[in-house]
Image 1: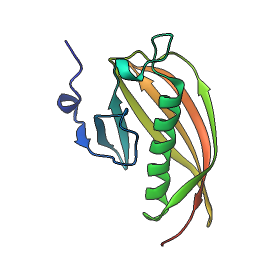
Image 2 (image 1 turned 90 degrees about the vertical axis):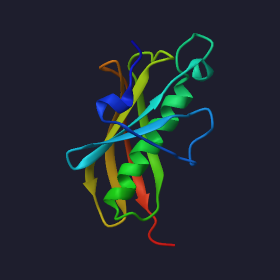
Image 3 (image 1 turned 180 degrees about the vertical axis):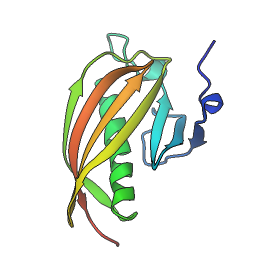
Image 4 (image 1 turned 180 degrees about the horizontal axis):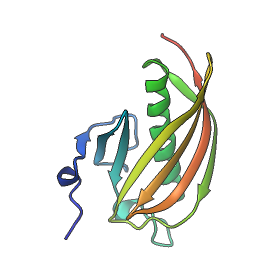
Length: 136
């Protein structure tokens, strides 16, 4: 039986900031924060038949940026540094969950950790720093 995000409390949302190849975005409240997710398909696979590492990198960067923006009071932020650790292949056709947490916040930067999971297995972990840009 295919995974049904809506049955598990996920709500769809549109995110025009992500490339077209990354479709079907979902979010779910978890405690004081949110988890994000996306459905994968064959169009996101690399030559080895697994979800391309660039797709995974884009999604964790975007997710952690959303978390940083919330932590900054909903003002624009920008990635300064993003360190990635690929742990396990992500298979096309499976749902990927993304989470980020704030480790530390200063007046000008936010430090975060994040992870992507699929089928209960971590496929990528990340740490990074986001610059708080302020209101435009």
